[in-house]
Image (cartoon, rainbow over all chains, first blue to last red; front, side, top):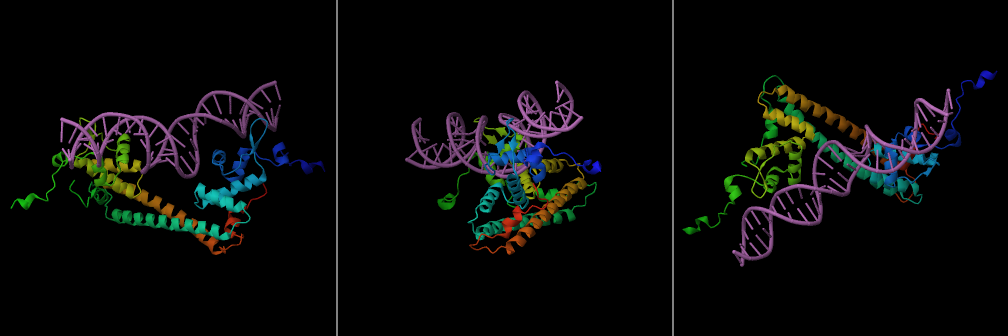
Length: 153
Length: 153
DNA sequence: AATAAACCTTCCCATTGTAGTAAGGTCTAG
DNA sequence: CTAGACCTTACTACAATGGGAAGGTTTATT
């Protein structure tokens, strides 16, 4: 039965040899090629080797790193903090206390941001319930925006 | 009793004449001088008149406008949206419906942002509760960041 | 009137993180 | 061998803000 390898797609040289150019690295990790280059310029990731044609070449370890970065970014860590987390990840003599400290700091910042947004939201909601929202020009929202407590300019 | 005007501070020419240069406008409205110039460059506010020495001169109407902008920014409206609100504010034939539409859109965006931050927060909180946070290097936070579901690079 | 302090001007640069484009070179499948 | 997919660097832009330099102006104080 020679039908066996009929559907089998050939692997490209790169795939066979287990390396990845930037486009495939981007697709696999969810980090755009643009960003991969940018992270390299920030020294967040090491300079990869190059093909003779000067194309960047990544290995699976590199992809793991990119993946790690993606996760950290998704959790709202800045690139600077992400770099810190990366170095902790690489350093096997790290203490988990330091990682936890970063995470708690991030949570605190999130809490602050959430609180702020909710306060704004409350104000806006309050204003909109008082606005007719019809053809008339009277509008408590605009009135509030132009209201000046310490007035008398 | 000539003591009467002892404590009375003289008003500067500008104050007497009721106009404001950029520094005082900034202090009074809470919008930095930097930003006042920037808003002018964006045509969010009109070009003010100038002194003979080329200093910007604002009147009380201008300050009200800056104040309006400050309020809108504080409520999280972008400068573009703020410009829109400003033109509605100036246009007495506006409908309150349009203002309300903008406010509701802003609320919706806030809700989305809040939800996203809360989801991130939950994930992080979950991770930190599982992290010992001591001298040992084992750390579920880092493990999670490096975890790769679709794996096999 | 002279001078110092406070204030203003324009112009340029930095930030944070991401995306777009142009002009050109390389790799690979057919 | 060639077309098309892919890659390279180098700019540009965004959104909003802040910082600073080099120089001119206004105001307060001697």
